[in-house]
Amino acid sequence: MPMYEYECKTCGKSFELLRRMQQADTDIVCRHCGATTIQRKLSVFASVSKEGHGATTDFSSGGSCSSGLCGCGGGSCSF
Image (cartoon, rainbow, N blue to C red; front, side, top):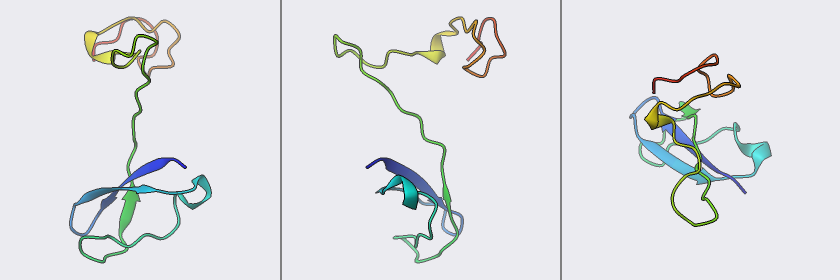
């Protein structure tokens, strides 16, 4: 089961829930204030290289993205 990150629009608190993919956007009650104004946040994931040293993709260095799939529109990123 994937871990999803949510934010309460009433109190502003963020929290994570382990849920089935089919339940990712079903109604949730904020565990902090009890409100139902919850929005799922865009989560990023990191994959570990074979050597076990951090993420295999590092956008902070301003690397090249010739495919355009990283949101740079092709060419060099300036993250």
